[in-house]
Length: 103
Image 1 (spheres, rainbow, N blue to C red):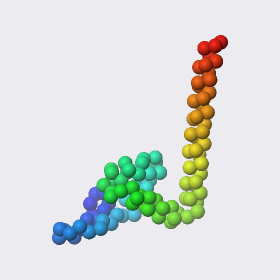
Image 2: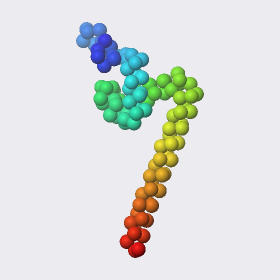
Image 3: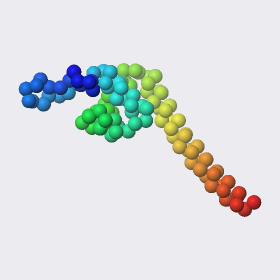
Image 4: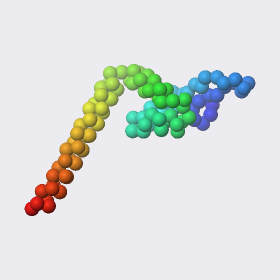
C-alpha cells in the first residue's frame, strides 16, 4: 500500500482499479467539510475527479445516519444566514459612509 492510502495494481503493467482505505476516504471527506473545494481536494490527492469525493461523502453520511444529514443541513442553513448577514453589514457600512459625509 502506498503512503496516500491506495493500493496499486499487480505490477504486471496492467492498470487496475485503485482501492482506497476507509481512513483515506474519511480524511478526504473531512477536507471537504473543512471548506476545501472538491476540485482542489481531488487534485491534491491524485483522484480521478470530484465525483469520487461526492460518492464518498454520501456514503459516509449514509453510514452516520440521520444525525449527520441533520448536521449537514444545519451547516448549509448557517452558511446561507452568514451570507445574508454579511450583505446586510456591507449595506450598513456604505450607509455609514454616506451619512458620515453629510453630517
